[in-house]
Amino acid sequence: MGKETEEMLSDMAFIIEALDGYRSGRCIDPRRVDEKINRWREIGESLPRKWPSLKRDIDALINLTLREPKVKRLAKTYILINLGIRMVSLILLLNLLILLIWPYTATLTLYCSLGVLYLLLILLTVRWYVMNRMFTYYERVIPGQRGKVEHIRLAVNSLIGRFTENLKRECIPPKKYRLHLFNTDYNGIKVLKKPSWLRDYYLCEVIVEGGECNY
Image (cartoon, rainbow, N blue to C red; front, side):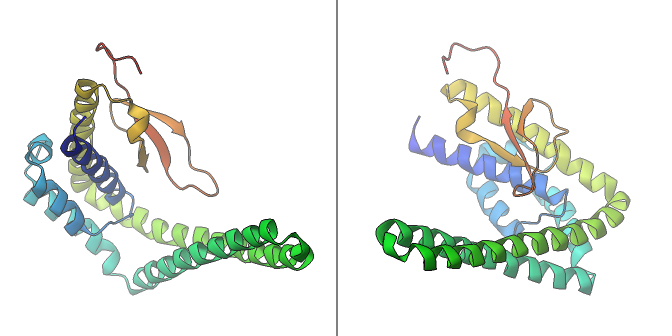
């Protein structure tokens, strides 16, 4: 597999995940998706509707959340909490590293680690609460946008089909490009892991059938 093919498949997986996220309130900056679709002609041709039309639907869904000041505050809080979780996780790993390098600091390091772990659990709980408040609002307004949501679902379905064809043609095992999806009503995928306390998405693989590849 050439570097260009690998980059295209990575971008295609990113676009599939991004479009799926728009259906559930997980909104990646559309400019990032726009950049990747414009880069690869094959991806644009795989969409059942032209990208500018689909992008208008996406913008309309994103604007649903921007109209509500409370949701905007929750979104900013969610970003800050995610940053805090990354920093606390890094501190926890640093404590474990110190424990391995300087075992004589075990007592102090363990006490610090327990405190950091407690803070991490608090942040995870708050993130779960904030995320659910945001999605509750989103789910309340989304029924009025069924047509737009269906357009996006069909686009994802089409991209998954082309994505699967490329993997089959290049003899690439599906596990190399596992997908993080919030919806599973697509053809040709299987769910490997369901959402859990630490994971709010489905871990999925496309189903590659037939062909002469030995994975």
